[in-house]
Length: 213
Image (cartoon, rainbow, N blue to C red; front, side, top):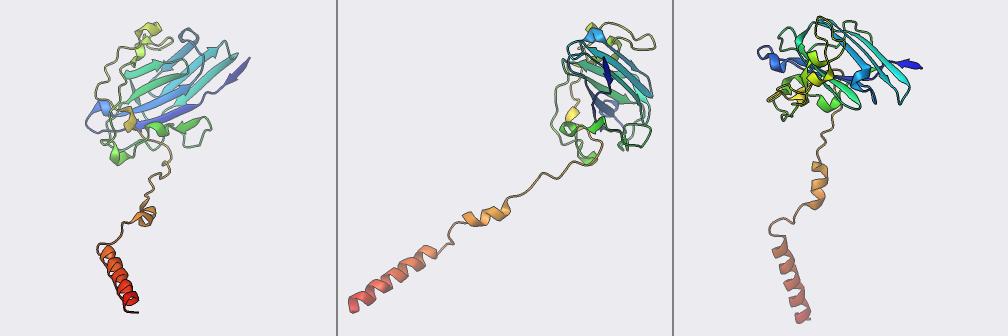
């Protein structure tokens, strides 16, 4: 039975004043892993995940050491049929993004930027708000350390009003996708004002010349 490292997508948001807007967003891709077959241990500087899929005959295992500290008590989780999604509150308020997710700067193949939730650091307040009310407290995840263990039924009660997970960023800059079509506009330019009058005068002169002949 194979053990694999799952793909992890991440993005972030930062604030030096509002803790609710100062977090990491993680998506751990683990399809067909039911809640009773997973274990998640979140500590201030580390995350350990293990999950087993009976249908895929596959065990997923993940160990992360974060760039900086997480507030485990204020972090949230949501389990779906395909993913485990986490909103991890950064412990220190800071308007600057983390330069990377992990403590070590070396590149790892399983970790990628979540471009669906990417936003530039200076554009965090411009993205529309999303509803993430299905996220619940970390105490609902099995295997949580520090007396936080419990059943998955504890998930789903978080209040996420006003929190916008689309305003996150991290990883490499996304490619510029905003192209303008001004060059094509020239082909559809309307006739200049007065063009019709010139054409009419030319037609009248031609008719007069023919009549004189």
